[in-house]
Length: 234
View 1 (cartoon, rainbow, N blue to C red):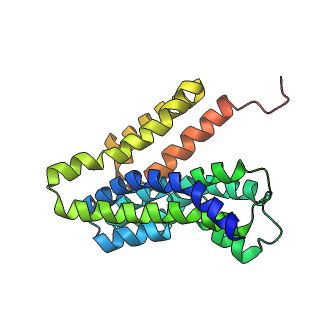
View 2: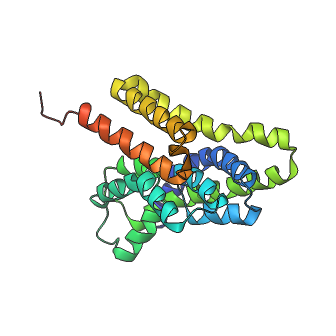
View 3: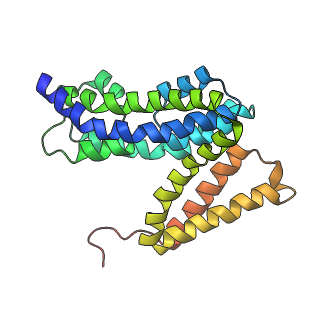
């Protein structure tokens, strides 16, 4: 069992190193929104979702409602439920319900990709080893970014804060190149977002609910107009 933990630890190390730079940018971004260093660190220690944290911090900073924050997180992080269901099919019988809840906490996109590529049943020792480095990398990177944002000049922290948006652009661009429908979905979401920002009546909608409406409307429309073909279909 010890060997499996060490194997998981080794597999999670590259993920943890990759999270350092992303969470560093989040730490700067969060501090720029008016949160304290310890509030920023607490968010990362209790959440492992870059998109969810990036969307949630402005809502918290603006004094948005808990319902607005909850629905935003539900929409953005719904994919983790699907990944957890998929991963549950590969779990070893020793992974009981309490351990499944613990594993689900750090089931990020990258952790899921590594774990799902394993051919043997996933033991709790391996999964805990796999989650250690990503969790530490995300938390320590956030703390470093928050500390840097509190020390570095405002002009420099503003420039560094842009990197987290660059990360999401880097995620979206390959998918847009792969499928034209994804490109139209992104463009529609951008148009709707601009409408909620500049049109007289729509601009009264809070940023959190505007984000929810744009994401759901664009995704639903393109899912209807250009659905993915199921395996086996012509």
